[in-house]
Image (cartoon, rainbow, N blue to C red; front, side, top):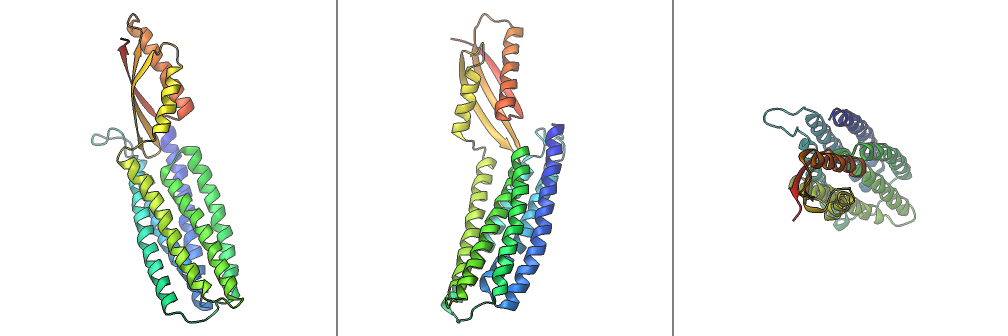
Length: 289
Protein backbone atom coordinates (compact mmCIF):
# COMPACT_ATOMS: atom_id res chain seq x y z
CA UNK A 1 0.00 0.00 0.00
CA UNK A 2 2.97 2.32 0.54
CA UNK A 3 3.60 2.12 -3.21
CA UNK A 4 -0.02 3.10 -3.89
CA UNK A 5 0.27 6.20 -1.71
CA UNK A 6 3.55 7.14 -3.41
CA UNK A 7 1.83 6.81 -6.79
CA UNK A 8 -0.89 9.21 -5.66
CA UNK A 9 1.82 11.82 -5.01
CA UNK A 10 2.97 11.43 -8.63
CA UNK A 11 -0.62 11.87 -9.80
CA UNK A 12 -0.92 15.06 -7.73
CA UNK A 13 2.10 16.46 -9.56
CA UNK A 14 0.41 15.83 -12.91
CA UNK A 15 -2.78 17.56 -11.71
CA UNK A 16 -0.76 20.61 -10.59
CA UNK A 17 0.93 20.82 -14.00
CA UNK A 18 -2.51 20.73 -15.66
CA UNK A 19 -3.72 23.58 -13.45
CA UNK A 20 -0.72 25.77 -14.24
CA UNK A 21 -0.99 25.02 -17.97
CA UNK A 22 -4.70 25.84 -18.07
CA UNK A 23 -4.25 29.10 -16.17
CA UNK A 24 -1.69 30.25 -18.73
CA UNK A 25 -3.64 29.01 -21.77
CA UNK A 26 -6.97 30.42 -20.60
CA UNK A 27 -5.47 33.86 -20.07
CA UNK A 28 -3.84 33.84 -23.52
CA UNK A 29 -6.86 32.48 -25.42
CA UNK A 30 -9.49 34.70 -23.82
CA UNK A 31 -7.29 37.78 -24.21
CA UNK A 32 -6.31 37.15 -27.82
CA UNK A 33 -9.83 35.95 -28.67
CA UNK A 34 -11.30 39.21 -27.40
CA UNK A 35 -8.73 41.37 -29.17
CA UNK A 36 -8.93 39.48 -32.48
CA UNK A 37 -12.71 39.02 -32.36
CA UNK A 38 -12.57 35.21 -32.52
CA UNK A 39 -15.65 33.51 -31.05
CA UNK A 40 -14.01 30.08 -31.30
CA UNK A 41 -10.78 31.07 -29.54
CA UNK A 42 -12.71 32.79 -26.77
CA UNK A 43 -14.90 29.70 -26.35
CA UNK A 44 -11.77 27.55 -26.17
CA UNK A 45 -10.35 29.89 -23.51
CA UNK A 46 -13.56 29.65 -21.47
CA UNK A 47 -13.27 25.89 -21.69
CA UNK A 48 -9.79 26.13 -20.20
CA UNK A 49 -11.05 28.21 -17.26
CA UNK A 50 -13.40 25.37 -16.36
CA UNK A 51 -10.58 22.90 -16.89
CA UNK A 52 -8.80 24.74 -14.06
CA UNK A 53 -11.75 24.01 -11.76
CA UNK A 54 -11.94 20.41 -12.97
CA UNK A 55 -8.20 19.89 -12.42
CA UNK A 56 -8.48 21.38 -8.93
CA UNK A 57 -11.30 18.90 -8.21
CA UNK A 58 -9.05 16.05 -9.38
CA UNK A 59 -6.19 17.35 -7.23
CA UNK A 60 -8.44 17.50 -4.15
CA UNK A 61 -9.67 13.98 -4.88
CA UNK A 62 -6.11 12.69 -5.15
CA UNK A 63 -5.22 14.39 -1.88
CA UNK A 64 -8.17 12.78 -0.11
CA UNK A 65 -7.35 9.41 -1.67
CA UNK A 66 -3.92 9.63 -0.07
CA UNK A 67 -5.39 9.56 3.43
CA UNK A 68 -4.68 6.23 5.14
CA UNK A 69 -7.39 3.80 6.19
CA UNK A 70 -9.19 4.62 9.45
CA UNK A 71 -11.99 3.26 11.61
CA UNK A 72 -14.73 4.50 9.27
CA UNK A 73 -12.85 3.69 6.05
CA UNK A 74 -11.16 0.29 6.44
CA UNK A 75 -10.49 0.15 2.68
CA UNK A 76 -8.94 3.63 2.68
CA UNK A 77 -10.20 6.76 0.89
CA UNK A 78 -9.27 5.75 -2.65
CA UNK A 79 -12.74 6.33 -4.08
CA UNK A 80 -12.35 10.07 -3.46
CA UNK A 81 -10.29 10.09 -6.68
CA UNK A 82 -13.21 8.63 -8.66
CA UNK A 83 -15.69 11.06 -7.07
CA UNK A 84 -13.42 13.94 -8.08
CA UNK A 85 -13.42 12.67 -11.68
CA UNK A 86 -17.21 12.56 -11.58
CA UNK A 87 -17.42 16.16 -10.30
CA UNK A 88 -14.95 17.28 -12.97
CA UNK A 89 -17.02 15.63 -15.71
CA UNK A 90 -20.21 17.38 -14.58
CA UNK A 91 -18.41 20.75 -14.64
CA UNK A 92 -17.18 20.03 -18.17
CA UNK A 93 -20.64 19.04 -19.41
CA UNK A 94 -22.26 22.15 -17.90
CA UNK A 95 -19.74 24.51 -19.47
CA UNK A 96 -19.85 22.64 -22.77
CA UNK A 97 -23.61 23.21 -22.93
CA UNK A 98 -23.09 26.90 -22.18
CA UNK A 99 -20.42 27.26 -24.88
CA UNK A 100 -22.66 25.39 -27.34
CA UNK A 101 -25.61 27.69 -26.55
CA UNK A 102 -23.52 30.85 -27.03
CA UNK A 103 -22.06 29.50 -30.28
CA UNK A 104 -25.52 28.70 -31.70
CA UNK A 105 -26.65 32.21 -30.80
CA UNK A 106 -23.63 33.58 -32.69
CA UNK A 107 -24.61 31.58 -35.78
CA UNK A 108 -28.25 32.73 -35.58
CA UNK A 109 -27.26 36.37 -35.16
CA UNK A 110 -24.28 36.04 -37.46
CA UNK A 111 -22.18 39.07 -38.35
CA UNK A 112 -19.58 38.60 -41.07
CA UNK A 113 -16.31 39.39 -39.38
CA UNK A 114 -13.09 37.45 -39.92
CA UNK A 115 -10.93 37.10 -36.78
CA UNK A 116 -7.33 38.23 -36.89
CA UNK A 117 -4.83 35.57 -38.05
CA UNK A 118 -2.97 35.90 -34.76
CA UNK A 119 -5.84 33.98 -33.15
CA UNK A 120 -5.08 30.95 -35.36
CA UNK A 121 -1.37 31.08 -34.48
CA UNK A 122 -2.21 31.23 -30.78
CA UNK A 123 -4.57 28.27 -31.16
CA UNK A 124 -1.87 26.12 -32.78
CA UNK A 125 0.68 27.07 -30.11
CA UNK A 126 -1.76 26.22 -27.33
CA UNK A 127 -2.65 22.90 -28.96
CA UNK A 128 1.02 21.88 -29.00
CA UNK A 129 1.54 22.98 -25.39
CA UNK A 130 -1.46 21.11 -23.96
CA UNK A 131 -0.62 18.03 -26.05
CA UNK A 132 2.71 17.73 -24.23
CA UNK A 133 0.86 18.05 -20.91
CA UNK A 134 -1.43 15.23 -22.09
CA UNK A 135 1.52 12.97 -22.93
CA UNK A 136 3.07 13.59 -19.52
CA UNK A 137 -0.14 12.93 -17.58
CA UNK A 138 -1.08 9.90 -19.66
CA UNK A 139 2.33 8.33 -19.12
CA UNK A 140 2.05 8.72 -15.34
CA UNK A 141 -1.62 7.65 -15.28
CA UNK A 142 -0.82 4.40 -17.08
CA UNK A 143 2.23 3.77 -14.92
CA UNK A 144 0.33 4.14 -11.62
CA UNK A 145 -3.13 3.14 -12.91
CA UNK A 146 -4.75 6.41 -11.81
CA UNK A 147 -8.32 6.95 -13.02
CA UNK A 148 -8.31 10.55 -11.79
CA UNK A 149 -5.16 11.54 -13.64
CA UNK A 150 -6.28 9.63 -16.72
CA UNK A 151 -9.48 11.71 -16.69
CA UNK A 152 -7.33 14.84 -16.56
CA UNK A 153 -5.21 13.48 -19.43
CA UNK A 154 -8.31 12.84 -21.56
CA UNK A 155 -9.36 16.40 -20.90
CA UNK A 156 -5.89 17.55 -22.00
CA UNK A 157 -6.13 15.64 -25.29
CA UNK A 158 -9.63 16.92 -25.93
CA UNK A 159 -8.42 20.47 -25.45
CA UNK A 160 -5.56 19.89 -27.89
CA UNK A 161 -7.98 18.78 -30.61
CA UNK A 162 -10.34 21.61 -29.75
CA UNK A 163 -7.52 24.12 -30.25
CA UNK A 164 -6.67 22.53 -33.59
CA UNK A 165 -10.30 22.81 -34.69
CA UNK A 166 -10.45 26.39 -33.48
CA UNK A 167 -7.36 27.33 -35.49
CA UNK A 168 -8.76 25.61 -38.58
CA UNK A 169 -11.96 27.64 -38.35
CA UNK A 170 -10.07 30.90 -37.95
CA UNK A 171 -7.80 30.11 -40.91
CA UNK A 172 -10.83 29.31 -43.07
CA UNK A 173 -12.35 32.68 -42.20
CA UNK A 174 -9.32 34.38 -43.74
CA UNK A 175 -10.36 32.96 -47.12
CA UNK A 176 -13.79 34.53 -47.22
CA UNK A 177 -15.52 31.97 -44.98
CA UNK A 178 -15.96 33.86 -41.66
CA UNK A 179 -19.06 31.81 -40.75
CA UNK A 180 -16.77 28.80 -40.13
CA UNK A 181 -15.37 30.47 -36.99
CA UNK A 182 -18.65 30.47 -34.95
CA UNK A 183 -19.37 27.03 -36.42
CA UNK A 184 -16.03 25.88 -34.99
CA UNK A 185 -17.21 27.19 -31.61
CA UNK A 186 -20.19 24.81 -31.86
CA UNK A 187 -17.79 21.94 -32.48
CA UNK A 188 -15.79 23.08 -29.45
CA UNK A 189 -18.91 22.84 -27.29
CA UNK A 190 -19.79 19.38 -28.61
CA UNK A 191 -16.27 18.08 -27.96
CA UNK A 192 -16.33 19.41 -24.39
CA UNK A 193 -19.64 17.66 -23.73
CA UNK A 194 -18.42 14.43 -25.34
CA UNK A 195 -15.27 14.28 -23.20
CA UNK A 196 -17.22 15.14 -20.06
CA UNK A 197 -19.76 12.40 -20.78
CA UNK A 198 -17.04 9.78 -21.32
CA UNK A 199 -15.42 10.64 -17.98
CA UNK A 200 -18.84 10.69 -16.28
CA UNK A 201 -19.74 7.25 -17.67
CA UNK A 202 -16.47 5.68 -16.54
CA UNK A 203 -16.58 7.28 -13.08
CA UNK A 204 -20.22 6.37 -12.41
CA UNK A 205 -19.55 2.82 -13.64
CA UNK A 206 -16.71 2.44 -11.12
CA UNK A 207 -18.67 4.05 -8.28
CA UNK A 208 -21.54 1.59 -8.78
CA UNK A 209 -19.04 -1.31 -8.62
CA UNK A 210 -19.21 -2.00 -12.34
CA UNK A 211 -16.36 -4.00 -13.81
CA UNK A 212 -15.38 -5.25 -17.26
CA UNK A 213 -16.63 -8.78 -17.92
CA UNK A 214 -13.76 -9.32 -20.35
CA UNK A 215 -11.23 -8.53 -17.62
CA UNK A 216 -12.98 -10.95 -15.28
CA UNK A 217 -12.83 -13.64 -17.98
CA UNK A 218 -9.10 -13.02 -18.46
CA UNK A 219 -8.49 -13.25 -14.70
CA UNK A 220 -10.52 -16.46 -14.53
CA UNK A 221 -8.35 -18.04 -17.22
CA UNK A 222 -5.24 -16.85 -15.38
CA UNK A 223 -6.41 -18.54 -12.17
CA UNK A 224 -7.45 -21.80 -13.88
CA UNK A 225 -3.94 -22.52 -15.15
CA UNK A 226 -2.52 -22.50 -11.61
CA UNK A 227 -1.61 -25.97 -10.38
CA UNK A 228 -4.14 -27.26 -7.85
CA UNK A 229 -7.08 -25.16 -9.03
CA UNK A 230 -9.80 -27.45 -10.34
CA UNK A 231 -12.48 -24.83 -10.90
CA UNK A 232 -13.17 -21.10 -10.47
CA UNK A 233 -16.63 -21.12 -8.91
CA UNK A 234 -17.10 -17.36 -8.51
CA UNK A 235 -15.16 -14.18 -9.25
CA UNK A 236 -16.09 -10.55 -8.55
CA UNK A 237 -14.10 -7.33 -8.74
CA UNK A 238 -14.50 -3.64 -8.01
CA UNK A 239 -12.40 -0.52 -8.47
CA UNK A 240 -11.32 1.81 -5.66
CA UNK A 241 -9.47 4.74 -7.20
CA UNK A 242 -6.30 3.21 -8.67
CA UNK A 243 -6.86 -0.13 -6.92
CA UNK A 244 -8.66 -3.30 -7.95
CA UNK A 245 -10.15 -5.49 -5.21
CA UNK A 246 -11.03 -9.07 -6.13
CA UNK A 247 -13.18 -11.77 -4.49
CA UNK A 248 -12.60 -15.30 -5.78
CA UNK A 249 -13.93 -18.72 -4.84
CA UNK A 250 -11.96 -21.68 -6.17
CA UNK A 251 -12.47 -25.42 -5.88
CA UNK A 252 -9.49 -27.66 -5.01
CA UNK A 253 -8.95 -31.34 -4.26
CA UNK A 254 -10.90 -32.19 -1.10
CA UNK A 255 -8.02 -34.34 0.19
CA UNK A 256 -5.62 -31.37 0.51
CA UNK A 257 -4.75 -30.15 3.99
CA UNK A 258 -5.00 -26.52 5.11
CA UNK A 259 -1.36 -25.70 4.37
CA UNK A 260 -1.52 -27.14 0.85
CA UNK A 261 -4.73 -25.25 0.09
CA UNK A 262 -3.21 -22.05 1.47
CA UNK A 263 -0.16 -22.44 -0.78
CA UNK A 264 -2.49 -22.54 -3.79
CA UNK A 265 -4.12 -19.26 -2.71
CA UNK A 266 -0.69 -17.64 -2.43
CA UNK A 267 0.14 -18.71 -5.98
CA UNK A 268 -3.16 -17.23 -7.14
CA UNK A 269 -2.39 -13.92 -5.39
CA UNK A 270 1.08 -13.73 -6.98
CA UNK A 271 -0.35 -14.43 -10.43
CA UNK A 272 -3.09 -11.81 -10.05
CA UNK A 273 -0.71 -9.12 -8.83
CA UNK A 274 1.88 -9.81 -11.53
CA UNK A 275 -0.42 -10.18 -14.54
CA UNK A 276 -3.48 -8.10 -13.63
CA UNK A 277 -2.18 -5.52 -11.13
CA UNK A 278 -4.63 -6.63 -8.44
CA UNK A 279 -4.11 -4.70 -5.20
CA UNK A 280 -5.92 -7.12 -2.92
CA UNK A 281 -7.54 -10.51 -3.52
CA UNK A 282 -9.81 -12.33 -1.07
CA UNK A 283 -9.59 -15.99 -2.04
CA UNK A 284 -12.02 -18.54 -0.63
CA UNK A 285 -11.22 -22.24 -1.03
CA UNK A 286 -13.89 -24.93 -1.29
CA UNK A 287 -13.54 -28.69 -1.78
CA UNK A 288 -14.16 -29.91 -5.31
CA UNK A 289 -17.44 -31.75 -5.94
